[in-house]
Length: 396
Image (cartoon, rainbow, N blue to C red; front, side, top):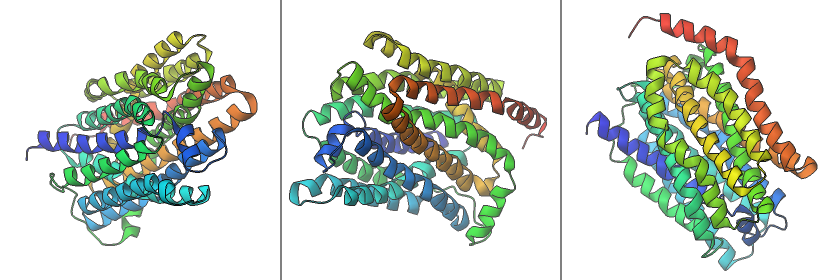
């Protein structure tokens, strides 16, 4: 199979994983009620947080194991199969037995631990391909955006049929991921050692990864914020149904998907600094603008703007990880990026949910957008220094 076709298959894997994940967002309050929860905001917060806490805990495990063993596909296929079965179990249990919501959260965490393997390692396999890091990460970005863009409205429609149907469909999609992954060649660099410790040592030797990790953290913080607070805000402030909420989320994800690839190619030509720094600054302001929008139409326009700006900075940030990581540390480097991103997503859920519950939705929008803006300003000097060093690096 050609590199171009493998890029398309791996992007399809990323797409399907994200599609399955986002199906649950538009009616998450309806879902947790069906799973035995007694509250909406708090239970939704913990249901989303359980998955991302597992992402944080296991992204690095799968990435470093794949580097240490010189294999990625077994972890992708195994994680997809186990994750799919656990999605299905969550959908099946409420209909046959009474389980506590704490048990539901445990199963949700196990599902997250398995699901992060196909997501993170398929992105790592894109890094293993030739053709330009911006191009490869642009393909990952458009897959992420497309999966979330389609998942939001589709999930809203599925909720109209049955509250647990999105879980069942997500389980089936993960089994599709396992089948897709078998079509590509495992191009992981041969392991120099079977010891996880040595792979971790390679990552510690690249402290500059802290810069894209920081941007990845705060970018995903806003994504976690919209997954919980944004969803409940649209449903509360504008009285939207799950289906309508899914369409509102799609206004962000559609331009985010369509523009990822061209912006990724652009970052190969102009460097990473401009897309990352300028994009993050504008992105923070745009997030606050959505919270200030007085009507559903103006909020929808704001979501489109957020999506366009997000597409500008996301592939450049991921490509910066590729620029910095050595061949033998790519799995761990991308796993670290995804782990910090998952911490950001988790933080967005928890902090956003807390602020919204205590001080209202507008305050939560200000906190989320302000965090993005402050990080962009604080990290700019380091990003400029790193950009200069990369430009001076001899070509491989």
